[in-house]
Amino acid sequence: MYPTHSLLEKIKLYSIILWPILVTQISYHAMNVIDTMMSGRAGTTDLAGVAVGSSLWAPILTGFNGILMAVTPIIGHLLGKGEKQEISRSVLQALYLSVVLAVVVYVAGVLFLPSILSLMQLEAEVAYIAKHYLIGLSIGLVPLFASNVLRFFFDAQGYTRITMVILLITLPISAFLNYLLIFGSFGFPRLGGIGAGYATGLTYWIIFGLSLLMTKRIPSIRAYRLFSHWIRPSLSAWKAQLALGLPMGLSIFFEASIFSFVTLLVSRMFTTDIIAAHQAALNFSSLLFMIPLSMSMALTIVVAYEMGAGRVKDAKQYSWMGIALSMLIITIASVFLYFLREPVAYLYTDHPDVVALAMSFFLFAIFYQLSDAAQATLQGVLRGYKDATVPFVIALISYWGIGIPSGYWLATQTNLGPFGFWIGIIIGLTSAAIGFWIRLYYINRRFSSLRS
Image (cartoon, rainbow, N blue to C red):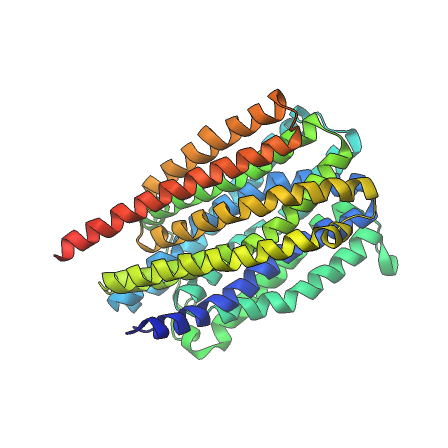
């Protein structure tokens, strides 16, 4: 990270930070896409089971990952202030916290997963696949959370290519493990959709091992001597991270959970074909969302750095530049999705009825991409300002107070059926984008008045 003095320099630095994050996010999501696509080839029931399992897992993963994401603005501000000596301590405490959070998730799964699946009233085979898919994933909880802490540590300093390289190495390994365990190749058991969970859980261990290796092999990272001097876990340090990370995590959780909740409602109310088509459309549109999400994460890095150094004007320039670029790019991507929605649907299934349904879902996905891109980048800017509590309230009201109720009403009280839920998602995301925009306007005015 370094100061910039013109818009051109800002675009250059932002691009350098952004593109590895984008490759990393696409690679992470590609693991889920591979799980879904390969499970769909094993059978429609496998695809539905993985859809349900993924929908339960996604909000948990993103929510807890959001808590750990507080490492990025914390370290960004420390770098901007020149307090590098505090960085190693912050990272170690975050690693301790990540292990605790992983254990919490695991215990909660053991206690509540059977009851949740029972309440969903799924077909017996779909519920069985969903449960054991999640059991397979659980073997990688600790390494996943710990490797994400290291990732945010790398990213906050502008070293976004480190995780990109790690993911590019592990992605084909994940695909190969899927091939072995889903289809029972080379003497391995044929597990169907369940095998996708175990393949991904094993991949998380590989990612963590490579992340640890990078802390020793890269000189600028090795200089922090992360694991040379162990310190005791500090409840006060955890409290400081949770004060920022918890509202961040909850905001992300409430966004991710509306997609998962809609999938669960669709699973209860409609046929297996509709579940499969819904999941295919949601899965691929989520892949496109990696673009604004990556831009959001890059904005958090640069805005936090500039705010830590007290350069409010530069932070504001980064903010508007990033938001405008995000909207432009996702608009172009949505146009491509419109014209390619049929071949994309066939990537998930060869059943004509499911393909036709997925194509219809893709039309709604195109519209929610725009609102999703706006709210994501706005949240990234606010995180850079270390503003998390008010955005959390905005997210809760928008997603669960407006989006879900309106979607449920449209799905049950009109002829829209499952498409009503997608309209509800669009309404919720748009409400959040408007709320975040107002909040950012207020934050900018407050900092401008402090400077004057």
